[in-house]
Image (cartoon, rainbow over all chains, first blue to last red; front, side):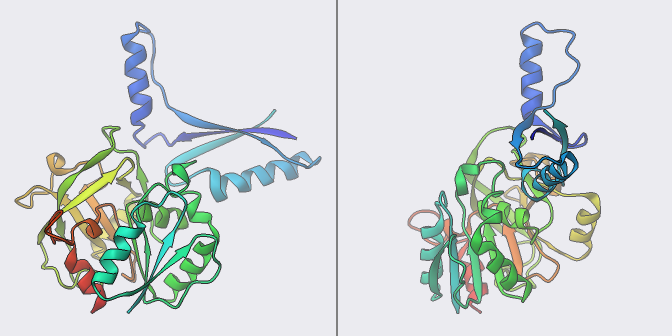
Amino acid sequence: MKFSVTVTLKKDVLDPQGKVVENTLDNLGFKNLKSIRQGKFFEIEINENDQEKAKNTVKEMCEKLLVNLIIEDYKINKL
Amino acid sequence: MKSSVIVFPGSNCDRDIALALEKMQFKNSMVWHKETFLPKSDLIVIPGGFSYGDYLRSGAIAGKSLIIDEVIKAAKSGCLVLGICNGFQILTETGLLEGTLLRNKNLKFINRDVNIKVLNNKTNFTSKYEIGQILKINIAHNEGNYFTNSKHLEQLNKENLIAFKYCDENGNVNNQSNPNGAIENIAGIFNQKKNILGMMPHPERMIDKLISNTDGVNLFSSLIN
């Protein structure tokens, strides 16, 4: 069973990389750009047929290692 | 006094810190991260460097390595623990110190000597310094921008757990003297029991006039006391 995990900085944490990307896109002429937040993306495959169980495992992985909960939020999606 | 320096793949200040400790008469052991046995130590040092190439987040992988369980056990039983630079990042990843170290505000790797001010000298790490003493210490990092939640920040201030703050040469703590964007110019913090110190500056690089200065010496002589 495959899941994706997207990790982004929390709203109130400054994202200097995202800001630089945003400014550069603005320089390239994308004038309707509102904002950019940069993050991380993981594709995770689990040996488990029960979707609920598999999702819980991914959640545990996020909270134990993949995400720093002080500054980051995450979203899990089934692929 | 016995010390142990934990070595990860990618640590690169491990020999510098070992040299500093030996110069101060510590009996030092180097401990590889795959070990599950920690020699009996009065002081554990997690050195600077780029453990695991900073994969995932600085210090994240090292913070889950085999030896870390032993470090956590020792720290919780009162052993002195010093984390410098990547060592500080690793200590926050283990939860032994609260908060985290974000990317430098200017997105640049900063390698230069900066001024820091001693805020608390009633600890095993800083007793040989004066309060308000200004030290010139090297920093070399990409993620040194200390960040923590407002509740913990309040605790740091209230319980005098801030060890060092970035300042200018006259001791002024302000935005101009903040190299990396750290909250309240924080350069180093203690845990609540003050047996753990995490700091971004490198005192082990400041122990010999020949190559720099001796502003880091008193940190080690405080410890040997």
